[in-house]
Length: 449
Image 1 (cartoon, rainbow, N blue to C red):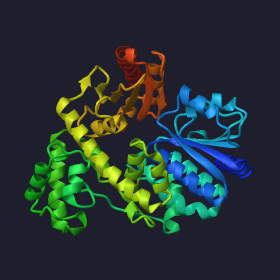
Image 2 (spheres, one colour):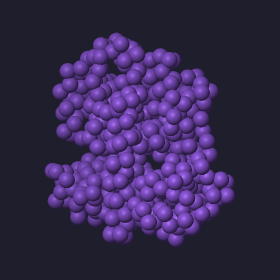
Image 3 (tube, rainbow, N blue to C red):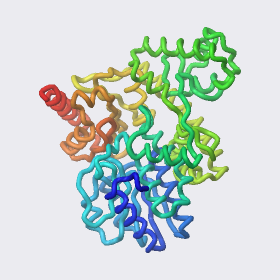
Image 4 (cartoon, helix red, strand yellow):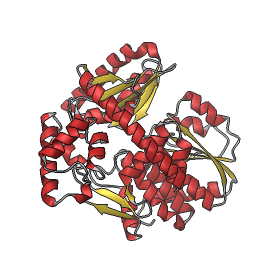
């Protein structure tokens, strides 16, 4: 731990002391892959400490859920992968609180024990996620918790912090995980692992127009590559891999995918020793549980429960089939373009955040952020995704979403490249207009620097 910033070490030590001194701990976490990974790490660490605990997953942290937190009867609260936007309100509560988050800093804590990469000059968007912070906290509790670094890598993969190779706090986790034999880095490929007919059909991270979601399309590209339908990635010769990779690259180029994006798809993979899978696969399993409303099973799967892992596999395959269909439908429908953004409505399909990310990477105008809207219930939930070249031109989605949501009576925040929010249903048109203007101002300011 001596490679970490001294201020972070102090905060982690304080957090560990707070938790050790209380018997019943309430954990609140996010419902995505990073949040479920975070909760799994905390649950495993608390069991080893002999603590009683309860875990609650939130789709977002808003005023309603803050009231849920205020009503807790627990001795102590841990909030993971959430909390950055509500530090001031959490400071006003009497119960001991530990926040392990990585989203954009709104304010520093006065009473809450608050660990966030941004507080130490480290980018929480790329170099330390919620699961990273939870792993460091778990290790501060006990060195025996280093095996949980494998679960942390599912969170890192879930928040796509491994895309350009790990950095910052995640580098420390990789170094320690590799040294201890828990994590192995291997070269990636444009070709997905596993059975090719299944994985090419279901794979939306690598959304290939006319192939993803199409049995005929998958069979066609395999035939063109001279590969039988029964083969898996591990069965391929070097020549077969070269032919199939080339065909995939041609198709992605034809649909406008940038070379940088293809390089991201062919990223390194991280094999997890005790799980017999890579971090992205585990991440997908936990994510599918959280987003399918069985977050408890996802947390148990992250803790290694075999029955819940099997359920997670089944849930992931079912949700992957729904997602690839939703993505193919969105591709056929197209996105609506404004001057500085492009948007779509996913109320019927769901999967707003995931469709937003896939669209941004594979079918959308790479110069404009992509916005997804889901208009279910009394609020409209919003996801936004950008690309690194957009950030270089001045785009900051965390700031833009925060301002645009607030302008219509909602809440928003997140990262510069990926942010979310919620607004009243009757304010959608006004929100989109305001957000388009805010992004335009950011681009103008970026050009003038």
